Length: 126
Image (tube, rainbow, N blue to C red; front, side, top):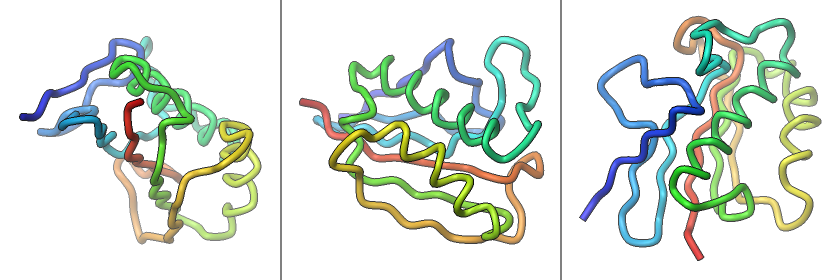
């Protein structure tokens, strides 16, 4: 069985997909970008602020599913410019005090709404 997860504290999907889907004890969070859930505006002052908003959106979706950042086992990071790798890592690392999840980071030619970073995660519930 699958259950869709929808948090009011994260931006609504901009297409035909769910913020997250839970099946069994696994939660698959769709790619999050730096949209502010309250205003609908992009947080794009710089790559660090953008990454922080993305991570906070992920955190909000996971909380709705009864999980936290420590439940993440896999992350996928998509960057429009690999030169931002170190800036994204600096922010991303603040969300994982120990035992960070497995992940890959790839550069892509373009992301939704022309953002600089999009991150999706898979979490396992306790």
